[in-house]
Length: 255
Ligand code: OAD
Image (cartoon, rainbow, N blue to C red; front, side):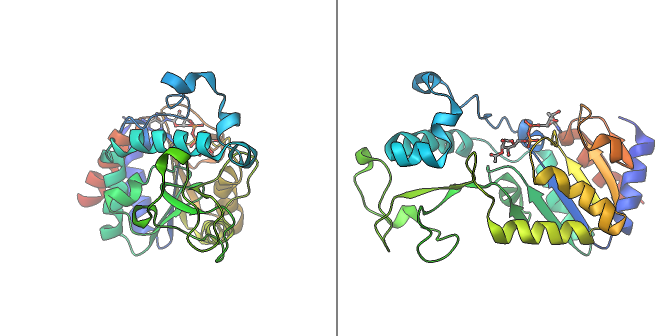
């Protein structure tokens, strides 16, 4: 790990007044979060994600899609935040303002203690009415519902439509409020810390460009491999976030 880069990142973060952290699946890698593909194991190997993670698939077979997400949720529930998640959460005690914008649906930033997290692609631990009958999103506390689990998802207690996972499926638009706030904060960031994303999925991948273009933000990219953001980053640190982020926190504390 390049200590000069770690120290520069620490100095930049210590000076930040409006920090945005943008994360992707890489920040959860060291927690062993099963990838989309990992969850296509056992009896699920016969399916293609497109058959399981789309509104059309849910419409056609709510029980199949519900049961697969329950399977994924159980897999995700077994993993814990890693040192990278905890380092990001510690930034809150050290800096005036930090928001985490994540593409991950595993809830690990929140579990690690981050208090301002925009989950652009939803959260696998949350559920909502598939008709959003009380407004977008109509979140439903499934643990309080009684229903025949063998039949698949529960009916919405308000309108009877199927309850579904509160995650973004292929061909679906992102939650409007989350996206609007993420875009706004990205445009106002003075430093953006990009961690563990290939930068291949829109609109998340456009946020570093937005930060640079609208506010001349200083971009720090942390990834063992180069990604689409690396070419516009002011500082690229090639390493696993579970090691790099704690090193940056240590350098911030010793400045
Ligand atoms: P990807 O799986 O596309 O990219 C993960 C990135 O993490 C890669 O660039 C890896 O090099 C990097 N990486 C791997 N190990 C790492 C580590 N220990 N520390 C830091 N980085 C590491 O995941 P995302 O860019 O997040 O969308 O894109 C995933 C999105 O695409 C998901 O949110 C999903 C999918 O379509 C939706 O569900 C809507």
